Length: 167
Image 1 (tube, rainbow, N blue to C red):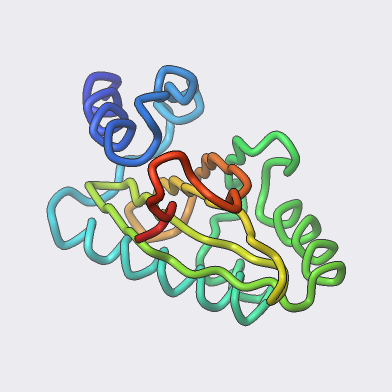
Image 2: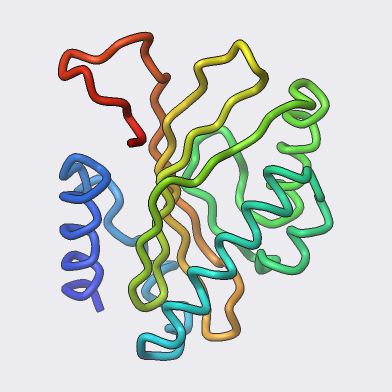
């Protein structure tokens, strides 16, 4: 399983994370949880569930979507959010209250096995250049999100290459 995760991490790292995967090696808790159903069908299902979750939770600010998409024992690797579905909802209840116009646009999606990566542009309002975010979700066999990692950076006014961070 560790080699499988390293291969996934290497491909996602090269594509989205700038190769920085060594720091997201799975914990012992990851190895103990049940693997997702094998095959392309489960990867496609997980991809659609990640997209549906993002739309409902992050764009519609539907906090109840967490119950439909996140397992109660959800493992969180973002240092500002505690483990568990309830802790996730509590954290974003505050975020949405402070930034009611927060909206996310997904530009890229990669799904393989039980992992889904999203390349996202999140803004808090019309004047906010926003954040570039890569979210990595791990799903269980039932299609619930059981683990999450993210990498975030502010969107600059201009880039050295002249290319957008999203197009």
